[in-house]
Image 1 (cartoon, rainbow, N blue to C red):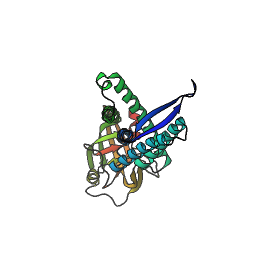
Image 2 (image 1 turned 135 degrees about the vertical axis):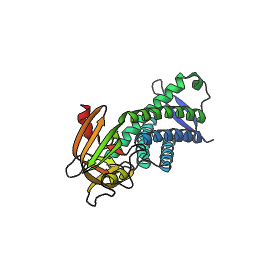
Image 3 (image 1 turned 180 degrees about the vertical axis):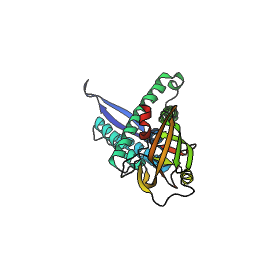
Image 4 (image 1 turned 90 degrees about the horizontal axis):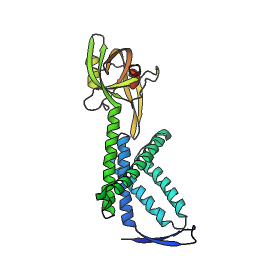
Length: 286
């Protein structure tokens, strides 16, 4: 193990020099594991936008920066830790998640900061309040185990929160004499809109779309651009549907001339054939 010394002076009671011995390999490994837990949770929150190699690379960077703060002994300790914290957070966000603009980057940073506070608080709570964990010998394995429990609890909270935002409903679409009925997912993250009319756009499974249009999609369509954190931007084919009915929480609403979009590469989640734009049912929630 590689040990290092650094000085810390306490000026409140005179000049006192304390010596600590740290092992860089253990320090790096512990922080790598905790940073990986942190980035994995952020990735779950933001919709799986980062790949596994990027998660690992971001965790390596964060752990390396943390270790570096202890090596730069010429800089005051408080300043080193503050600069190291800022450099680690900004660097991990930039390396792990591909953000196309500043708005997306700020969103990632806010989620990363909130998740870090949650992980830190949960780690201290588990370590100090649970007798079995409190009496364990401190080390890399102990930290990894406590961090893993905190990560698991955070994952449960994220999934529960997502389920609250995702509400299923029944939708009926009609064009001329063709009528289809699908199970739809109300997704608060769907903010698509038709560029000219600014009308909300829902996403329809391409198989259902072909069924609605008599076997094949029309040649004429409206281009509906979309962007997503960590993924390529693209164009969805948008089509106008004369009539649509939505059954939502025991209520029914009828719409006319609504837009749906579809793509060969983009499909609703498993078990659903449509992702409904939340703007369409706002009046049902009032």
